[in-house]
Image (cartoon, rainbow, N blue to C red; front, top):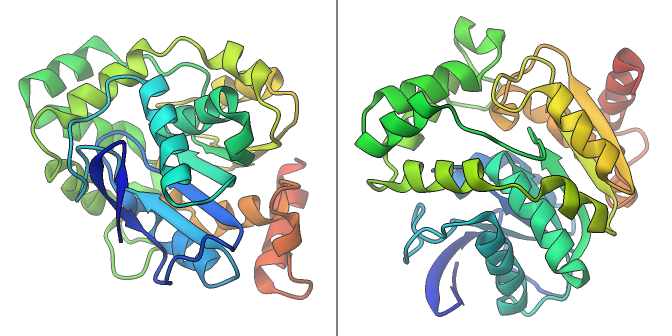
Length: 288
């Protein structure tokens, strides 16, 4: 559906269900130069189980109009405006990579809008290598190649995908290739210039889940744990052998973490459901 957010026409995925602001709201925030489609499986799961879902294309991304926002703080204010535009009060805000910084900053700047947050492949700071910034600025395809190489764990190199009908690494590259000129560079600059992660974490009142990849080369697990230590209430789930693109690499285990590890999601557990059994297995295996 389309929403007018800060006077800009915005495309928002709803998980295949008509949006109902009376239901508990989940907002999904995508990463750099991506769009709402990275949340397809998770958005549908929540939308078909009693939640309202908003998975927006950020300004200048995907099917949304406008220019890309130049800072994480501006994106956080925009997410708060999105929730208000949808006539909702609060949301569980789930973000991946750059989107995790946006979720964190939204909870810090607009605590009344965040009932819980989930930060997937995250860190308090996301510095970008000069080589990647230079390639993105020049519009060189090498930037996409670098992100593809660094973005996935070992298993992605074997081919195939757990997401039905998709090729994991190839799908990620095509998604980056269809972004508007200059968009990847703008988003990478926003990540590179963000310095408020630890200070903002201390201000967060909502419970947090952090889902980390053990082999993440873009936001290493140790950096995610440093952020978790700064949050007043945080639960960490690490996925063995996984890289940065966790929704593509390990969709079922990401869902398990969102459902089973955060008090903000605990009510969605269904005893006897296969996902809960897998969540219990994951917890036992990782010891977390």
